[in-house]
Length: 412
Ligand SMILES: *Cc1c(COP(=O)(O)O)cnc(C)c1O
Image (cartoon, rainbow, N blue to C red; front, side, top):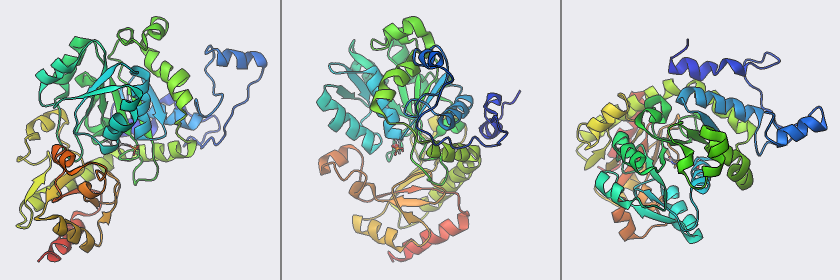
């Protein structure tokens, strides 16, 4: 019985052996799949025979990637999609609709906030914001029209950590599904199903792809929620039971929206998955050592990283994530100008927006990722113009510290 994370990531389920003996599932670059008879095709379309028909709905290489993630996460169903944002939008679309609402924290990934505010709100979805540090406010915000509560394991760039067990106790009590964006920690550092999360979302662009090779996203049903309690899924749940969410996505929302993962990207991400645990360990170690170095630097005004004892989330993150604190940290310099000068002086660390790449990346969030928000909104979002975000890669630590030293020399 194989239980280790890395072993499972590398070998996948035994059922995934390739018929031609290839040790790696090939890229099935085909839009459509043929069937031996008209009857076989009829049965497949009727949902009575498991087979691939068309790659917008399912594909063997993508299926392999989904099965691997199922084995790693313990979820009962996995759907891979074209991006992290596709995972979030498909999930909201399958659960909620005009005249209903979802509850979320305003401190979240910038494009998710923009999806809720600028794309879904005009379609009639209400989004209520509460602080996830305040369980009473969360309980008060849930009403009969609430279709989901949406949280992130670690908000970015604020790096706030919600207590998932406390929050899931509230959502469960109200019969509302809890959606968690676990991109920054992944199932390697945090098994969300054990903490009562119902749906886990991942941007597989980040840690999973490994090296930022490709964009992708994942929706995982942890099997904790009875979908008969979700109004849009009730009918399906009567016949399909626990598989109602994934079925509703595959037969309707995901199929109709069309944000499918390309087989080539699924291949790259399956490859990345195999080395993910090694890369996360190294990235977390680099992030912690870098945060400690920055905290002791006289030109740094503050450092925010849950791995530091100075973080208000240090204890909770430690117990919730089993010792890893992720690869993202922020730090503040004296001024906006100093932030720009610092970034421009770096030789090794790259100026780019991604996170959890193999390369260490730096960005000034207020002028880039959150540029669409007003100055007042930025204050509300905790986006100081003096703040830089660093995503630790997997390089050798002395080289990273050496490069940061160069950055500080430019400020002297
Ligand atoms: C990057 C990211 C997303 C969006 O993922 P894409 O693959 O870029 O669409 C969503 N949530 C978090 C926390 C992210 O870091």
